[in-house]
Length: 289
Image (cartoon, rainbow, N blue to C red; front, side, top):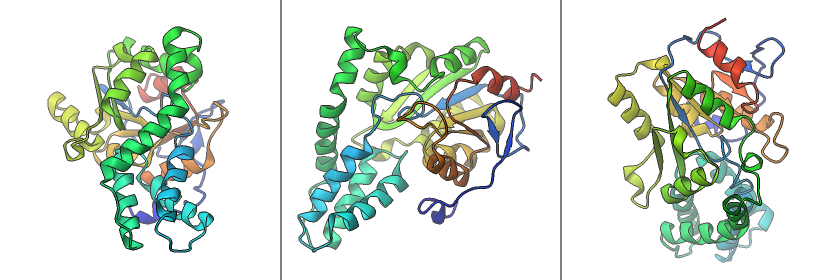
């Protein structure tokens, strides 16, 4: 896919909606009825624990760049940062920090190691989300409020159909394991994978390649669900069925138009707002109509 799909995303033409649903079929040529394994992204796809993370990362990065003393306004720096944060969303967090370090160097500054920036960001983010995880643990917060609507339902539905599900996230693996457990989702996955400090030894593409190799899969035997450019692109590249989850995270309903357009550019075959209509979606994907 060309890089122009990553920034300044243009409005994409509407697809065909399954009757009386919000399920938008972008690619009507996909081969249905063969799904054996499913891959899910975590943050923004099934979990809302980290909702608002951009509002932590972007100001932190703007502060770092402002320290270089170039005279750029905060608005200018914010636009710059949002471009590369959005472009790299779905990849491991470290890649956003690598680019931050590069931007500091371009401005004549001496950057910290990207890992140091990542740890600073994670500390700031934890201050924002700690109460959510604590609430899930002590029972004061209903897990359904921190899950994308219908997420539990589609996992149960897929398990009943004999589909093995996997979780792959750009968030550090210990956090993914902890938060998936807090949401009551761990048992639904045959494997949970997250980012490593040794970042070259993990990527969503690597997880996809492993699943395909271990289970001798071909193309549409794998379905992937995600709200980020990277996982949709990765699934599309191997000929899998890519379902873009364009959730409006703040309202927990309806479509986020920016996400939708970006996911279509990445190669999404289908766009959904959430998993409320999972039964209808899977009936169609499994060609049971």
